[in-house]
Image (cartoon, rainbow, N blue to C red; front, side):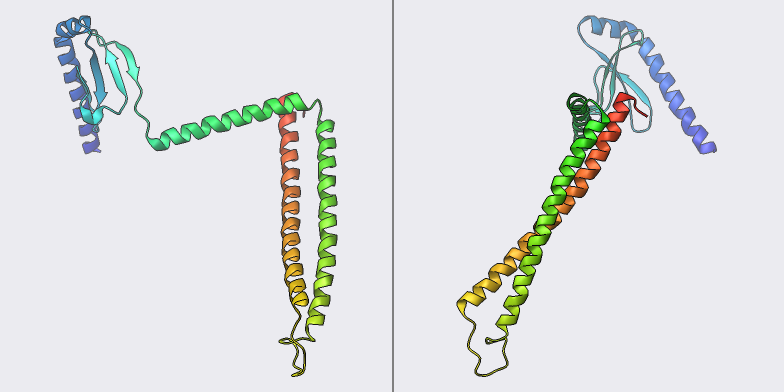
Length: 217
């Protein structure tokens, strides 16, 4: 506790000394400012306030204050931002612009909540139909693959019969092609279902935001 009080006392003492020096040199400072020079105030890493006609290089990037001969602040120079701070500010600005653009689009596109719901139902129905068609096609491909695998058992190397003929190029090509088609349609089905889920959530968000903008409860 005592050490803390001592540190505060020293800082206050240093600040008081700096102010006295400033007042003692007010005449010369006023003359300097009349010649276009500036008097600066800055704080060091110990929290001590300093005054001078230039900023030491090690403090050049931090917040600075320009004062006149009466000790009144006339200008404040913001601290230089780090690349991380600049990136965060740019991200925040971009997100704000995106939100404002989304709000404008909502208000310009829709007149009521039922209108949004109708469009939602139309698009989700279309996606549901696409999911259904893809699922049916996938069933057909799986059935075809099942038949091909049964047929392939009559050929080497799948057959245990030493007299079994080798698999024809056509059967081998059919196996590869149908297998590729199955993987493609499975991926299509996953994408459609993900799109369906994402679209449903997006419309829910749009409806909630539209109500907020319109003051609908």
